[in-house]
Structures are given as structure tokens and as C-alpha cells.
View 1: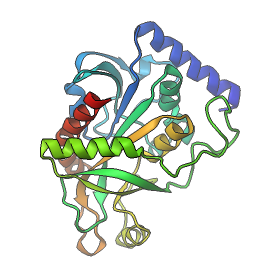
View 2: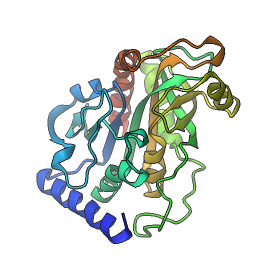
View 3: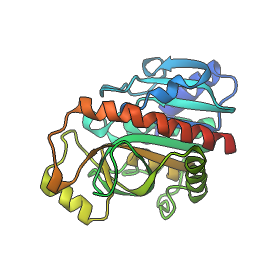
Length: 275
């Protein structure tokens, strides 16, 4: 998609949503695989199928409902993506991150993301949320490749604090107050859709990653490029430890993600109360 076509599509989606929603929230949340339970906690919610919104890509992955929901999480008005699209679905990076651009132009200031991930760190317990402190992009592509859209952000965005330190501190304090154990670590994003081989898991762990998944990083890159503050959590759904690897199915991942999502949802509600 060339520069002018992309901006035109973004503007169409922005105008459509402004007509539907009189007051656009400053906080947006993206829900990953099996984490749709958070959407059920929204009050005064109103949803729009991605197919209704001009230019929005539709989700095909299991556990991704594919709707943009507006409502309140606690006292905080939020915009919530109930499901995302992935590189492995055949979409290019700019299409995957199209909704983040729409959020940016709608005036969203804070973006919270969730995903389901395998725990590379052998000390991590399955079913425990991981606060993402940093990431490694091993997806083989970048959503900022090509002509830079200067009106959306700088050519060379700084990623030294991609995950906002202030939001991380709020999340840790919220988890502590709620009595929810959390882990902190580095998330590595891979293209998928297959789960990794033992040799790949050893490599990723050796590189310094604590959890591995197939999403989130493109959205974070675009959000940082656009000046949004980012907070992200992984639901650790399985032990992705090469020397202790068991066969894995998507159904098992979704089951654990749903249980862990309840904990992440509580933390996000508490963080939203502080914004």
C-alpha cells in the first residue's frame, strides 16, 4: 500500500469511528489468544465487527473474536480490540498494525497489549502473567519498512524505552495489591504459525528471551513510532524449554490463556484506575 492510499484508508476508519463514538477514549487495549474474557468485564460496552470498519483486517486465528469494543474498564473509558491479526495469517506488517494507526489518529495516548506466549525461562510458572520489559524482533520484517509517514512519526524512532517504565511500575504495584504473582522478562516475537523446534528454543533462550510468541512486537513498534505509551503482558501458557518439551496444541494454549487472562484483566483494571 503506497503512502497516499494508506493515509486515506486510515482516515476513512477514523471518520467512521468518530461518527459512531462521540467521545473517543485515551486508553486502548489489544487482547491476544484466549484473553477475550477481559472484554466481558467492560461496562456500558458497544462493539463493532472489524468487517464494519473501513480498512480493518479481519481475524482468522482461534480465540480472536474480531471486534472493536468501546466501554468502561472500572472507571476508565477504553477502546478494546477483542482479537488481532497476525503475520502468519498472511497479512503484511502494515495491515497488521493498521488498527494502531487508527488509534493514534483518534487520539489514543496509552496502549495496553496482551498475548499468549511460551515460557522460555525455566523458572517461569505456567499460568502466571509476564510483564514485558523489552522485546526481540525475530519475525523477519518490520512495520516501518518502506517510505516513512512523517506525519505519523520519525524515520528512526528510539526504542530504548518501548515499554513505558511508569506504566510498568503501576502494573507491578497493582499486582502486589491484588496478591497476583507476576514475572517480568523479555518477549521474543517469531513469525509462526508452527510452534518452535527444541533447537530454535535453545537459540531464543540463549539470546536472552524469557517468553516466545507470534504477535505484539509489530504493534509496539508502530505505537512507539506514533508516540503512544505502551504496557504489555504475556500469559505464559506452556513451558517452551528445549530440554523439557512436551507436544503442544492450540487448544491447550487457549485453555491456559483464558485462566491467566482473568489475572491480567484484574491488573489492567487496577492500572486503568490510576491513569
